[in-house]
Amino acid sequence: MKFQISNRSAQIFLAAALVLFQAGGNLRAEEILANGNFEMADPTDPLKPAGWDRVDGLGVQWAQAPDPAHGQAIRMDTRLSERAMQAQWIKTGLTNIWNIPDPGKNAIAETYGLSLYSAAMPVQPGLAYRITFDFQGHGGAKVWVRGYGMFAGEKRRRWETYVDCHGKAGAWTTQSQIFHPTKFRKDVTEIKVMLFAYYPAGVYWFDNVRIEPVAEAMAK
Image (cartoon, rainbow, N blue to C red):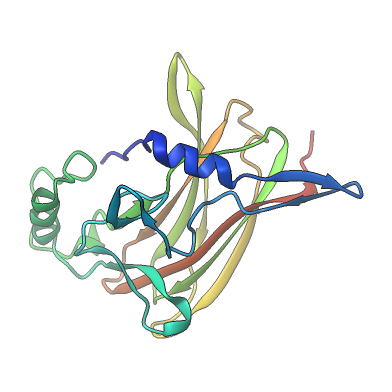
């Protein structure tokens, strides 16, 4: 499996969303993840949420949430088979991102699961960050934060953490966790969020994803 590198327009969009300033000795900040509420379309592709990879439209959908208060959100259906997902990836031209060489009849929940990446966001050395998100679903889902930096002349994944999603079908829960992307990997310069749903087979929803610096000092 591969992830798609964000394009220049997404990078510019995300860079403009980063606002950091000092006031009264405490760090205050705007969120750095653009379009975490999924309400904005990509200016070059109205079927794609701005600041995120393309959805396949079957297993991973950018859709109206079950309740009006949440507006647009990300829906993942892991009940679909590997064969159904592979056929959809071929149909939508996404096999350069997701590809199963020998897809089976089993639900994709049992093997690969489904996921969606955000575009990259720059991070500042020594800062702690908080991720917060809304989740609806029962069982296996995670929200990953993955850090990237230069290693041996290439940009590679150098660090990661995740939040286990807890909830139940038909109800939203809000979860939050603090993380330190440069504490042990000082070469990390940017991060991506990956929404991930797997087992048991079912429907999962994600919305209102936020990442923001926090005042907590990182241990030196």
